[in-house]
Image (cartoon, rainbow, N blue to C red; front, side):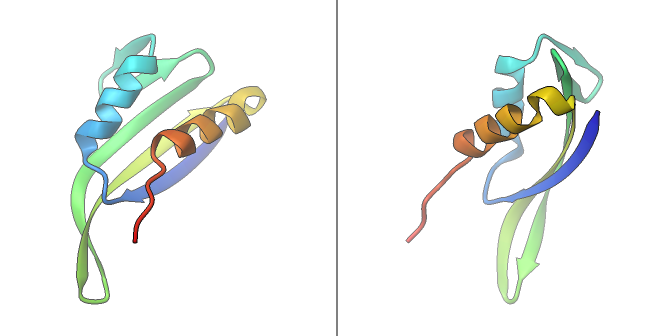
Length: 84
């Protein structure tokens, strides 16, 4: 099992709760769990980059090595946003 810590900016915590609720098989406290993985969704906070404030959420992922690449790729696709 590998542990991966990711921080996402400009997403609401509720978006992660909705996504992981839809793919998890059960919830254990603040963890969302599936076959070979579990995720802890941190609290939403404000993060400063220079003088600009961004919403930020930290995600802690514990995942089996066999499914890690596919799991992370799906997560990246789901939370991919373009800006301009």
